Amino acid sequence: MQGLTSEHAACLWIPLFPLRCEEERRPDLVGRPTALLAPEDSRRIWQASPLARRQGVQPGLTVSQAIGLCPTLALLEPDPVFYDEQFARLLLRLEQVSPVIEPAELGRAYVGVDGLEGLYGSPLRQLEIIERAAEADERGARLGWARGKFAAWVAATRAKPGEPVIVTDEARATFLQAQPLAVLPLDADDHRRLQQLGLKSLGDFTALPEAAVTAQFGRSGRAAWRLAAGRVDEPVRGQIRPQPIVATLDFPSPVADGGMLAHTIGVLIEHALRDPRRTGWRVQAARVRAALEQGASWMIEVLLKDPAALRERILPPLVTRLEQTPPTGAVERLTVEFTAFARGTDELQLFARDAVAAARAGRHRALRAAAREIHQRLKRHMLYRVIEVQPWSRLPERRYALIAFEP
Amino acid sequence: MVAPARTPLRPDRLRALNLPSAVEVGLDTWGRPMWVRESADEEGAEGERGRDADERGVEEVLEEWRIDDEWWRTPIHRRYVEVVLEGGAHVVLFEDVMTGEWYMQQP
Image 1: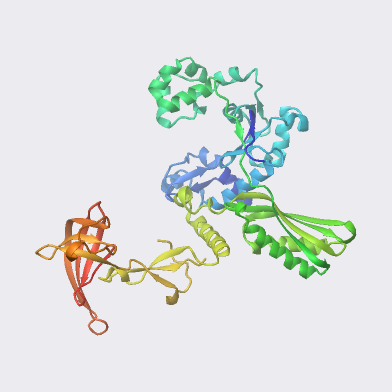
Image 2 (image 1 turned 90 degrees about the vertical axis):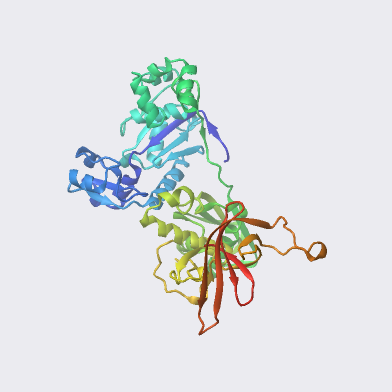
């Protein structure tokens, strides 16, 4: 499905998503005050657990300040690569509910719900399905349902875990008018100015003339006013994903040998990975189908724990399934199909925003993964690092050199 | 720079960085660079070489120094001039005193 939109949205919001991810992989942290260090500045706090916040630890504090407030604080190095992967898996599970999924930020995603009433029923039932699909009930997820992303997001902020907020079309205007200004997508300065004007709710805000708001706050103020007034419905826009990629081989004579089938699957995986449509995407799910002698068929499917773009990571789980449930007859035609994708390593924490934000713990992992994929696709090193050779040399060309980056 | 991966360095896998490239340099009467041409051009009438699109003027001479080194190996005798070119590029020019050829590289 490509480019689908939905007027009505369900907003799934897991506050402190990175901290929740850490608690899931380290259960010993549950019940302790914890804080994540900022990826771009390891001397400052990025996120603090509710227990830590109760003792005064806030995002932005220095480590020494935080320890002074909470001596038992557990400080964690951030792992942005791991959080991105967890979020990508969450989005994949949401796609089982609706084809229209739009991620907003780590821990927040919108689900397009137009047309789901025929499948799942009422909005409340839809939210239950979404929560179950996302396995979000133990993560403190908040759910909101409304027309438009903004209203759905505001509804989610008003919700509590296990108590979603549903805003019908008829109640939407009244609901928004009563909300505090903090929900508006404005920067801190604009929020401060609105408070100085004595405004408290979206109703107070929309009581101002739109032209006056635009004159004072510019384009962002105008956009916020229109959202608050319900003049704009932001539909959920589904991500564009590649269609399934298929590679097929017809055997000259039917094959029953497991080793030959495994080898052929590997060859077909390599062929499918080279498909230009896969550029920028990693494989999340793969399927192997076979046409057997006398018209029978056989199929196995795997959902990869970690999306991958390397044969060495996609093949083993398929071979395991092949050994567990081998075809019942000789195979005449074998097909490998990539059926689900996740964003590729070109968006992983390597360059652009992620190079800045990547933590020390996550940066090497991202570089290693990127180097492996580049070498696999291009068959030569394309990533280099600068090393010092004779930095003291008076000859500039002898000071530094490039060496292939080997993970 | 990326922190070392603790894998052993292999000198055969090193690629040079900031290698000098041959250029043509026009000098004034005091021997200071006036312009730099990076690509080969054609001679004009009567053998004169005029400025063309590949040529950039030297806006400022920042520093000059000389290196005489490695007499025990391949002797190096270079006269370096650090300049700012037309357009703002900050480069280092050097003349190989032995051959009279000029080269350009990053500082």
